[in-house]
Length: 469
Ligand code: HEM
Image 1 (spheres, protein in one colour):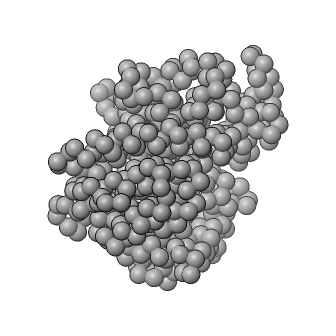
Image 2: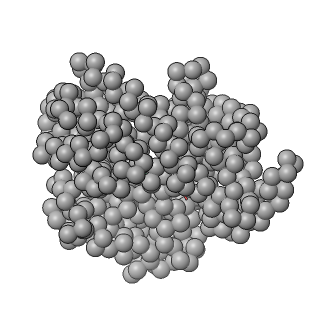
Image 3: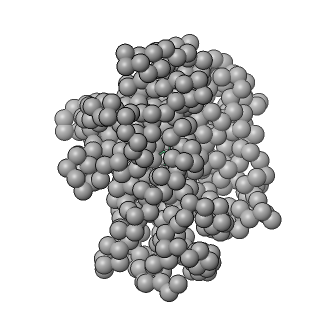
């Protein structure tokens, strides 16, 4: 465990811990996949393009052919995709510290989001996460809801005025507004907020850039420029935020300490806030888009939720109502099952390791894929159907195995924002369904594009009719 020592300003901070210094950096070999189900070699190029075009179809075809675990290529290296619940559980729990998250994620987001929690491993990761938990405790969460509710209220008033309305871009804008105010306490309406918002978006978009060189005016270059701006901006604010009692997450992190009184250093705070922006960005918006699409297609469920919300008198969701919105919770869970925003996790083996029947070589990318597990026909009833009742206590299909349903991941790296995301989603649905009835528009069936974040290809045009409560 990293130990604490006082920094220049007298705060106890963590001693510099080299990241995963016990493991080699990845070399991304383009290799055959001896002994593993699936295909390597020349097929990899074709696989990569098929995944970009139709990831859902690709995973289904492979599962039907090879079973729930299979190796496949992705732009020059091999990934072992794991969907079988027991192996997913082993992988995420990782008792032997065999799977490095940092090495898994490094090639795609390592440079842009350096030092973020997913880019840390083992003891170093645990120590940092312990301190960060302080910003997600109930007291902090109550404060976040007070920030979120009025933003939703303002935004929904505007939505009702728009004749040609597409849900996905609109919820993304709302998500960005919430992220900047919640994470930083800055409004997008003021100048600094606008620049921060643009830098957020640039940094996040760069994570999926195909050309990964900072060449102007490319997407990756814009991302790195965005990161540099955010670094300077956050660093300049830390001292003031530490002394403040502001409710936003950045200020909470500046003041956060673990039970031993350890705090984050200035550099760590900056790294974590920038990563939080990435982790929170568009994930909740994507899940809400799936939920609203499903509610448009299933007016009976829309009415059930409205009925549930009617039972609460308040115009916006009260903190204690989170637990009583039971059917809203099932719908959100089902949206996350059908279109998980983080549909795979990435790890790399730090040594040769046995995973169930498979002997995995050192340095292999291994990926628990919820988009496989969430659709396994042996475990779920009609997995392609929208059926929120599968989460009811009577059926509880998601509890049939701990490695079957994991939209927020699991084990040491399980999403730190799980309760925040769920609270935000419910707070949104609460006000949205109180005000509006959703009428589907445009061509159907709606096709979902799973990358970089699941969303309907047509951006989900819908009609909004004032609801009668
Ligand atoms: C519906 C919304 C969200 C989904 C589906 C989601 C999903 C996930 C998943 C699958 C992981 C695990 C990645 C891995 O193991 O490699 C993760 C990690 C993480 N998420 Fe979320 N997330 C959501 C929202 C949020 C929000 C709102 C925040 C914070 C403001 C957040 C913060 C984090 C952090 C910090 C991690 C890294 C945890 C660690 O490595 O210890 N997430 N998320």
